[in-house]
Amino acid sequence: MIANSDVNLTVQRGTVHAIVGENGAGKSTLMKTLYGMHRPDEGTIVIDGETVVMHSPADAIARGIGMVHQHFQLADNLTVLENIVLGDEPTRAGWLDFRAARARIRDISDRYGLDVDPDALVEELGVGERQRIEIIKVLYRGARTLILDEPTAVLVPQEVDELFDALRELKAEGLAIIFISHKLDEVLKVADEITVIRRGTTVATVLPADVTAKQLAELMVGSELPTPQTHESTVTDVVEIRLVDLTLDSVEGRRLLATISFDIHRGEVLGIAGVEGNGQNELVEAIMGMRTPTSGRIELAGRDITSLSTRARREACIAYIPEDRIRHGLLMEAPLWENRILGHQTKPPNVRGPFIDRAGARADTERIVREYDVRTPSIDVLASSLSGGNQQKLIVGREMSGDPTVLIASHPTRGVDVGAQAAIWDLLRAARREGLAVLLISADLDELIGLSDTIQVILRGRLVATADPMTVTPEELGSAMTGAS
Image (cartoon, rainbow, N blue to C red; front, side):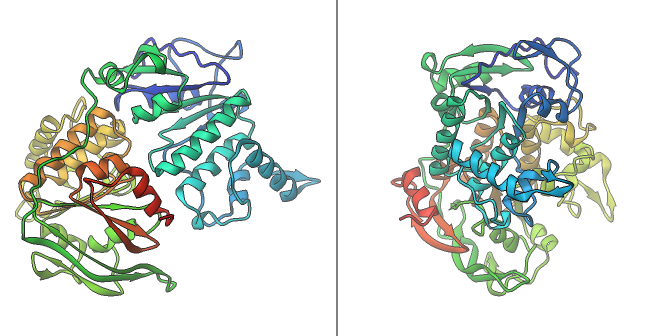
């Protein structure tokens, strides 16, 4: 199977070069090849006029290439400084020289406007600060070419602006920046050039001034740019799920959630807006039975389910799209049809009596692949072989099977292309029309505003504001999320 074919890409120093394309188009494979994680079968890589062959990321780093992955690779229990120097520890006369490292980190931070405290503990930092640490980490190793994979996926608007300011400083210093994103409006705002990849091949390189977001989307997927807007209301008077004064403490006694109360009606989407790390994760895990609340209760269709197990809640028709599909949504080294069974191992068509029904599970996986446009050569391939968007569509198809009454959707379109994003939006709208009650958590504020009937803002484990999606702006939401308003 060919992942990239006849790809041509030229990136100038002192520019931001964006790469856009559908999930599965070959963007990640191309970047992994440039970063030394794959060997090309044909073609050449030329850096500063010299043809190079890279066998590993260490070779790429030695050639001045650094990659900031979409999922941050930081150790929460270490300081900023310790994370940055990990694997490249400075020494003097055989001893670790943290004074020199600290001085160098502060120099990089000041030079490029990447404000970080070298002695802060990473677990106490927000997502914007963590991303700056990842950028400093590659600059610390001498990177002159930066690959940024979906760098704005988890940022609020103010943090996006701060990132773009930092990119301008990096450009001014002559660095080359490769910017991979599905957010076409941001690509048009930050890029100097844009290369479009479709089905493993470059189909166009354009200037932002010469194209619109609509034209870029058409180059990528052959269709117009979708929007998440929902106009008609389908909210009923029937409360499907209710939280009453839900409070959750950590094992150390730290308050994670404080007296969370809300109702979600049939046919309603309740959106939760918040900077990551403010309790969204804990809220989802408490609703799904993965954490035991300190106090308060959860009701499903009038029944108290606070003490039920996760399995019992799933059997009571709560569907769950997890935030991290790799850690919590899929078995990456299992075939697709086995992944279809996950979380649904007590219900047909996956079981017959006490036994797994292989034929039933396989047939239903084929249905999901067809109906949700999961692009795969076979249901027998491993989940790890699918692109991120196709992995997400498989999860969504699985969770929407079995007629759920409540859907907990945590970042359902994170890291997917405009085509997959539109498909997931359509699915949520259709399910809402049929009476599904949806709790939607998303870092994409346009998505949150477009799909939600009501938006609640969470800050430090508390619901601090309610917003009307018909009138609120992303900037106003961002201010509330950071406590500025």
